[in-house]
Length: 255
Image (cartoon, rainbow, N blue to C red; front, side, top):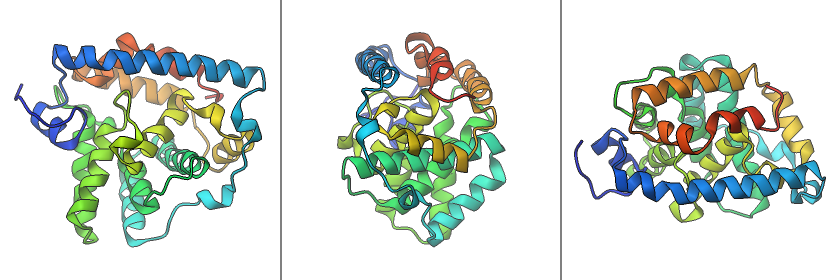
């Protein structure tokens, strides 16, 4: 494995290491995994007790519609050509939930970059590669899409690093608004993380617009394959220490 000084989870880190964690990096991720477990437990209990903050929040669902820019259209077309219906709808929901959390927190984010990253973030998950994290393939496709529409180098870097970072434990606003909201939106849809912050009406309407189509079963299988392909990667770590399969099953969605 090639050493690198690039921050863990960034595109440069994944490109240099294949996404394989050192022992020190694995230990470093255990703390945010534990913090996520604790926050999820408290939030989900609040949901069950109807005391969660999302019940008092107000979001205009119409404002969560995908952007219609050239970049957004190109990313959407690429996703439609490569993803199964369940993963494609997950990508749309990831954007909607991320945008909703951003609206609640009044986060200024480039909606075009967020949408493009959401549409492309899981493309690599459809074809696991031995000892290479799936997000590297996703980020490379994002780069290709960016080149076709003439996206700036800085914007391209923002998008592809958001993609490679999105499932690292502990992604925060310090990593940039696009990375943070992509990770947060995917977390809502996959494991119910931060779902307690969103109005129940928003959760229901987003799913109604983009049905889940047995997403839990398909995603769990894809993630198992990724963990097997990259035994020192983040997917394996999340399955071993993050109770990831159970978290998917317990997400507040039927399928």
